Image 1 (spheres, rainbow, N blue to C red):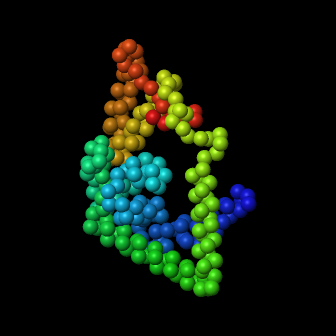
Image 2: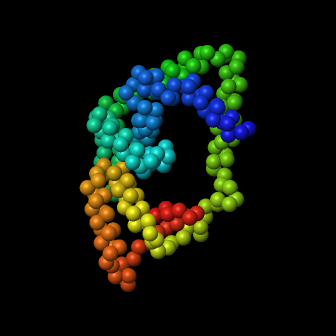
Image 3: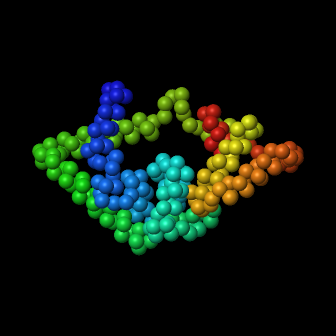
Length: 219
């Protein structure tokens, strides 16, 4: 199998399920990603932005825009998390639950219509093939390569180098935008604090460290 084989299959499958025009496909005003976020919220009642980012592997800024849209549409409510006050718990409103239910019903109907085009005798073979794809790809994603093992001892704490302070500002702003909905005014505040630290701090009393994993800053 080659990369081209997988790309060809991806193009075929996204066309089959209507992923490129998902909203129109289900007669809904939401994209595939937005509908997936709604699905997760409907099936995980105690969820915060960090949970969603991890579950869906979404960029924090992109997720923040989706959640802001949902809030404007009256689909979600945000409140302090009971587990961690620094986080924001996200729950669906009554309207949000109704919207998620409608999308789920339409998705089921769409898949049912697709399955109806497959002869009954071929459906077990289709199910087995799908199970095989999921098993093979999942096992390889979960099994790290020998040269990419992630152990605690691989994490390095080091002094900041040029570019790291800007990274701190960017990641902090993205995190608080996703979890609290804060805007660029907060980012400007953090930028000023970091700039003050860079220009004038007592190295005996004030320090900053970067956690690095596999050559990349992670905290």
